[in-house]
Image 1 (cartoon, protein in one colour):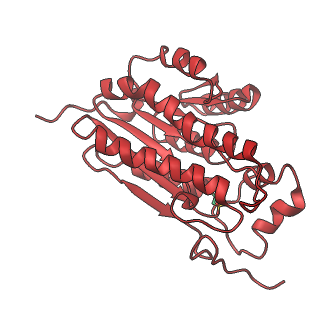
Image 2 (cartoon, helix red, strand yellow):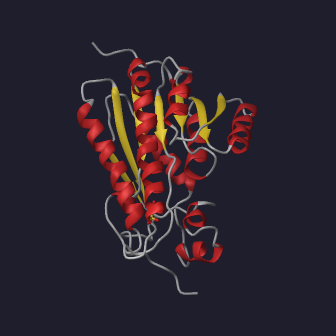
Length: 259
Ligand code: 8X3
């Protein structure tokens, strides 16, 4: 007999990396869909401001400052919940775009820690709560970098392949339990921070990433995709969604308008 699934309004959605970009946009969209959203990120002021904004708009939102790489803090965070409906593993990002020959091993380590171990920490800590919800969903926000490489991308590409493998393996391992595993792999998304962080705050280099591209995806485009996948009926598992702007045919085949 199918388990009765509670309505979205009584369900908690935890979003990591909710201080900006795709994470903040996803928290907004899930709140609008009726979830009680829990925003986590390291930057307390940002998630508190967004939680206040959502609450003022009549939604249910709380902020919880959290570093996803800090396992003790993640375990402590998990004790706050009896059940969790949705976990969106969005925290992560890229550092550097150097060739393999000269890439900084510390950047590689940091990217593995945030994109893979961070996702592992939250997923392990909340899996029992997702199970207990009777219809849990784990979302892994990977990247097109999790599916094919490009020059200068190896450190990030390796980390995102790790996130992809985590999602794929978890889906195999928990089949039969009431938890879906959805991977959303965005391509070129123009957010206020992704490229800037990647290039250590160099705005000129960051701007070059999107130069001449008519319409890179926005954070909200990806949030819309995630929310669509999450709000399918419980028996429908969207394994993997690759989403790119129309101007991007592959990681390295991008149409740029001449200036
Ligand atoms: C972002 C996509 O092309 O910068 O996850 O690696 S890319």
